[in-house]
Amino acid sequence: VVVPKKAMVARVISRKPAARLVEKPPSRAMKSVIAKGRQSRFLVFTGAKERTIGGLKATDIVKNRYGKCVSKKASNRAKNNIWANAIKEARAELGITGFCTIGMGAEGKALYHKAKTILEQTKAEQLRAQGL
Image 1: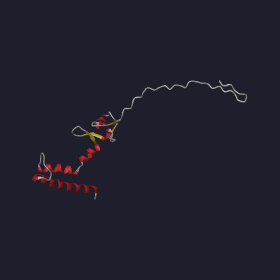
Image 2: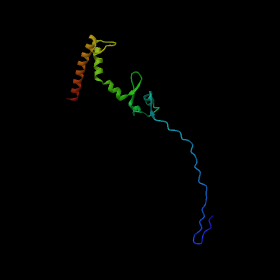
Image 3: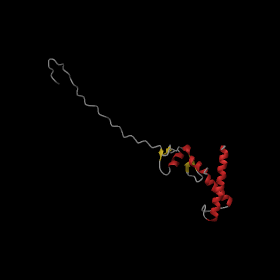
Image 4: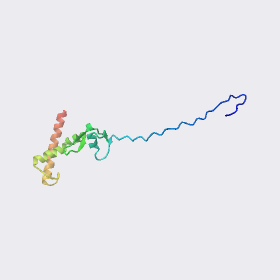
């Protein structure tokens, strides 16, 4: 305590100990809702995770004929690949089974030309459907 002088008013300063901070227990890290790695699409498809790194949700994923979880959009794009469909159709028409190199050898050249004509027909049909 300080002794006051005549002109000054005495001030008493209380010395309270500072309030001690209570340590919180370490909080658990939040589990990620983003699926990563090899089975990411499967994890999202089954509902274990919300989405993949690429942003695919369960509504965007479908199982293909081999049971693999694939992007619905990419699967539809592949199904509508006109060149692949033309090759399939040409193989069926020519009766080709097994491996055949397109454009190589007699069988392969026949396959290529048949697929090319089918492709042109398909493109023409698509243009007609669009009204061009």
